[in-house]
Image 1 (cartoon, helix red, strand yellow):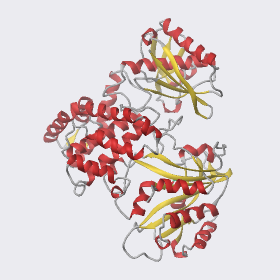
Image 2 (cartoon, helix red, strand yellow):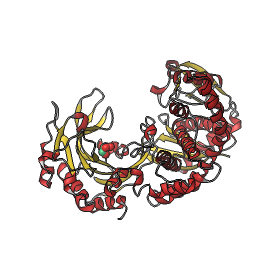
Image 3 (cartoon, helix red, strand yellow):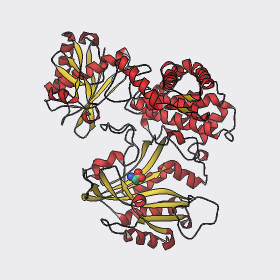
Image 4 (tube, helix red, strand yellow):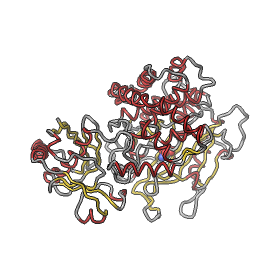
Length: 582
Ligand code: SER
């Protein structure tokens, strides 16, 4: 059979939809979440009423990462990365067409027998009426009444978040079992698995909880790719479907072990390497680190390494390259960034492996030593494993759980924070610092970011603010609000200002103060609500003051020479500069 992603896109394109590319996994300009967790997330502004450049009928497959299930990975159905197939109507069609499309795709394109399907619709509440319309539509297509269940808000109302677009939904279920299909749908029976969710997004939930009509009635649908492939191929283990077979085969080959009997470790390795490949290939330029997305990438790679070791794989061989290459070859035709960043991805994996390899063996020995002496791993020991051997706390907890032991997580946090205080890298309330800290080059880029921010305010205007930033050893990236493409002249002015300040050898100083005072001083602050009550403000001469966790250089002359490499659109009203220090 043709790849189901292609079947899906072809079908919806034939129904007048435009295929849009998957948005990056790391959301642009939304610091409140680490990763995109649903297909509709990048479309929220358009569901709220903004005009989408590709029209009113859209479809795509979106890369998603969900971390809530990280520890569950290893069973038949959980993944940290998955693809979500979605189609949208932005004020175009509504229930009738949406249900007709889903029905036709499932029964005529995927050839799923009607008798294996059931649906749920919204039973209504005091604000929104019972969804008889959807029920009738399903019934008209041949779904019998007993297989149409009316359920409440917990089951059949979907919201993007506490606030934002929301609406009642209709969910489609598939009978995944060889047992006789019961006449009536029962939501408690887990042989009925949900395969598709069509949300009729006609409301917006406001901050005070009230529900108002959106300017347009939209449809937002989501279907998990891994699950629908497993359903169509008739397997109950997602990792036994065509999505995973080549990867599992590769792991069998490398370990000289069969999948059967080694499922858990093989699934974890397969899943974690795949997610790592996608995170490392993302345009956000994530590398393993001790904060945010970088920390997740580190955890995934290190957890995969531990399970590879458990399978007896020679960690020093290029096993992770082999698996990653297999994954790259499976996805590169669907995601250009996977193809383009392949070499970089492979390098990130091997570098992180080498880093962890140096301490893993010794750390595991140390762990064994600790567990012979005690029956709870105290905070100091957990911190010692983290600080000296690079064991993410989650890894220590997992190892301990396998021994039916507990870890004093509070105690760990205390030692972690004490250490952070001492090493003076205390940051803006984020989980930061520790293992390796920021390198010399990254530190320079941090300071250059503040200079760039200050220069933009002079050249573009005082209302220009930072909207996002990302630093690697090779470059800095900076997003800011601005309604136009910078002219050559503007770019030159910005560069000259930054280089002038570097030459002036301005002193960088830090002062601790209350958040309130920092704001009164007019210090720049990107995510004010996220900072603790006491913050660090960095001053550069008298040209910049910013709330920041640091670290920074002490004199601007250390930065060398600043150069803008690229200036481009990032999203509506936001521009992006990539720059280097050479
Ligand atoms: N927003 C819905 C979901 O994530 C449908 O796309 O399930």
